[in-house]
Each structure stands twice: as structure tokens, then as C-alpha cells.
Length: 228
Ligand code: SAH
Image 1 (tube, rainbow, N blue to C red):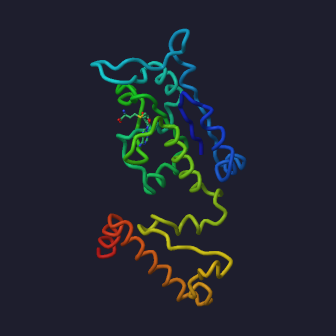
Image 2: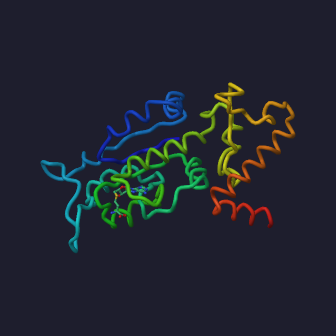
């Protein structure tokens, strides 16, 4: 898979793409990421990329020309603008993005992006949550990481991708590793029992209980789906 990123801050991506699972995917040739500096297409001597909003108001707006010049060569990709006004990112959206051959993530800054860019050069807007960031870069990294771990060959054991939070609409159960006891805190007996059927039903029970307690929204959907 290829992911292109349009940003005015290319250095934002150097650290995160160079560690862990994303680095492994890049090194293995499963993922390529190319960073496109919007400022390269900035206007005039100062490579200006923003300007004051029509109609007045606070802050600056990203201009059309530098963004369009950046996005035109990426016209064959699925172009996503990171935006608080986009559809909320969830595992279903991540699953869909992970099937694309070429995804472009556009990072806004300032008060946002001139609407005409969105109307003519953006296929979809995605939000990572109901809060406002200073720019789309952190949001783009969230998408890159969530998508990368789904690409075939990236996560060693495909089981761990198949059975995890949200996959079936439930949160994951609590997990434990050695030692069996730490400062008086014991690992639940059932996990040490070797009884696989009992362990499986304990896990299922924990997943349900947690989801019901912590995420009534997910629980309601899960129950509705199980009933139908
Ligand atoms: N004035 C805008 C916020 C602009 S924040 C508003 O109120 O909607 C600047 C940029 O950060 C945005 O263009 C977008 O690219 C990015 N951004 C901010 N919050 C985001 C979020 N929750 N999800 C995805 N991108 C976000």
C-alpha cells in the first residue's frame, strides 16, 4: 500500500515513521509513505500558504493554489482531508482504508482549508474525534498506524488483529503476564487453570461486562445485533 501525506510540516513525520510496526512495514516493502511539502507550492518569495478569511474573523485559512498544486499529481489516489468536520474514524473506516492501493492524507493547519479545495480535490473528510487539534499531522499519523497494522504480513499473528477491541463490537478483556503474583495482586485463577473452555468463557464474560460498564453506546449496538 502507498500512503501520501500533504503537510506544511514534513519533519513532523520523521520520528513516528521510523519506529515500531510502521517502520517494519516500510522496511518490508509492504507500505510506502511519501511526504509532500505543501509549502513547496507556496506563493511568492515567502512561499505563502495561508491568508485572511473572506467575511472577516479570527485566524488564517489555507489558500487554494498551494494545496491544489500539491494534490493534482495525487489525483489517482483516495484523497482524505483530516478535519474535525469529517466522519468519525472507527475500526470500520480503518478496515475500508486498509483495502486501498493508494491513500492520500491532507493535513490542515490554521483555521482550516478553503472550501473550494475540499469541493474539487478531496474525496472524503475524516475526524479522529470531537476535539480540535492544531493541525492534521497527528490525525494523519493515527490513520497511518491503524491502517498499517491491518496490512497483510505486518502483524506476525493475524489472530491478534482478528480478535481485538471493536472487531466484534466489544472491548477486549483484561490481560496478564508473569509473574502470577505481584505485591499481593494475583492473576485470576482461571487463566492458570489450563482449562481452555473455561478460559474462553471467562474472557467472553469479561468482554461483555467491560463493554456494558464502560461503553453503553457500543453495548447497545452489540445487544441489538445479537438479537437480530
Ligand atoms: N477551525 C477549525 C479547526 C481547525 S484545526 C474548526 O473549528 O473546525 C486545524 C487543522 O487541524 C484542521 O484543518 C484539520 O486538518 C486538523 N484537525 C483538527 N482537529 C482534528 C480532528 N479532530 N480530526 C482530524 N483533523 C483535525
